[in-house]
Length: 337
Image (cartoon, rainbow, N blue to C red):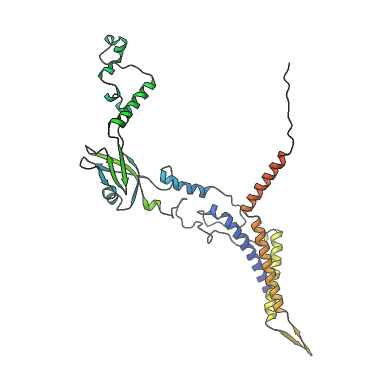
């Protein structure tokens, strides 16, 4: 064997070690690194877990409820008239204002006027006589024809509630139905007015390539294939890793030497021949490499983030159990002069 063969065996050992360590790191960190730039080498770097992906997933619910997210809620309106109470929002609005893009209506603003704006509604017991409530106290002849008296706040609340109950029981309440973007209004309009609503573009909500970080999704970590874990530098590897690399490099060299010797079953010498053990040496080297890889994988699995969290939990529970067995002193304080 030449020196280049030994160097190749050593280089392959370093790459093999980096590959297995990086695989475990990728598995532990991919969820926290998705969406980050691919420009930085993450090998032998501390990656701090964050809630970014969890928050991103929860923001999808926010998009549906209008409490945040990445989908814009837009505002639009149609004109309701007295000739009909049914309106096709796709034909009247989406085809016209959104170039036929599918929309999903989130909120319709169709309500009666608030009770506070009709505080003197006659159905709430505030007829003409109630404008002059001071007459009940015998003060009517001392003031102008119309007076107002300051009442406690609960009186205002009761009057507003009376107006709302009157609308609910005696009148046709304001409400609507919407199915497949076909809007039906109640009560049937008697005049023309604008009906406003909030909506989203369905394709924006269903776009799974939305850039949840600033900029586009290109050049960002997407999956196992482009998360930037490079081969490690040998000088930056600790002594435990270097020992594994030396053993693996030796096994590589033995396998190479076995390949060389297996080309010739024997070498002739004067009056005899020497049998070469190429196949045996190669088989032993392959078995040694498999053993080393299995040993390394088991070690890395034992110190994965999941395993460390479980070990920390077990240690904490054991410590708490141990502390519970320690007698707790009771301190009694005496009060006196």
